[in-house]
Image (tube, rainbow, N blue to C red; front, side):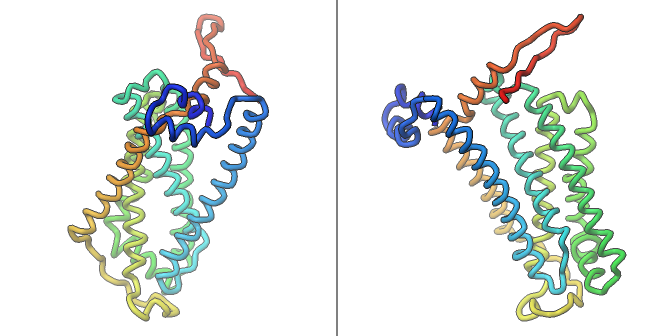
Length: 292
C-alpha cells in the first residue's frame, strides 16, 4: 500500500486507476503504519500455517491415499520441505536474474544471497534427514507392503528418478553450499536454487506419477500393496505440460512486473536507514540496526 500510494501521483492511465484502488486511503500516518505492521505479522503467521496444512493435505490425498497400505507420518514432512526447497530456490534464481540482468544490482546486494544460502543449506540437511528417517522406518519394518513401497518409489521401479532426485535435492546443492566463497557470491546460491528446482520436479514425478499409477481401478481400495508395478514413462504431451506449467508461472510473474513494483520500495528504504558502514580497528564493516 505505501508503494501504491506513492506511485499513484505520478502514474497515468490504467496504472493510476489500479494504484488508487490498491492504495485505498493510505496517507502514511502513524496509526496506519502500526496497523500495517500488525497486519503483516498476522498475515505471515496464518499464511505459513495454511501453507504447511495444504502441503500435508496434498501429500496425503494425492500420494499416500492412492497406494494401498501406505501409512507414513514422515512423508508429508518431506513433501513440505521439498516445497520450501523449490520455493526458496525459485526466489534466489529470480533475484539473481533481476540483479544481473534487470538493473536491480543497487537494490539486491550479495548479503541477500549469503543469508539465503545459510537457510538453504539448513533446509537441504533437513531434507536428507527426513528422507533417511522415511527409508529406515520402512526398511526395518520389513512388512510386505513397506518393502514393496520402497521397491516401487526408491530402489526398483523409479530408481533412476530417485537417484536424480537425491542428486539435485541434496548431493549437488550441498556440494555447492559448503564453500564459504560460493555462499558469499550471488551466483552460488542461485545455482543451488536452480538445482533444487530440478530436484523438486524429480521428486514430484517420482511420487505423484508413481502414486497415480500404483493401483488402477478398484485396486486402489486394496488392503495391501501386493505387486510392484512397472514404471510409467512420459509422452510428448506430458513433457509439454511440464514446460507449459513452468512457462505459465514465468509469464504471470513477468506480466505482474509490468503493473506492480518488483521490490517493496518502502521496505528497501526502511532497511537502508538501519545500516551504515563503520570502522573497527583496521577493518570496515557493515553495521546493522534493529528496529525492535
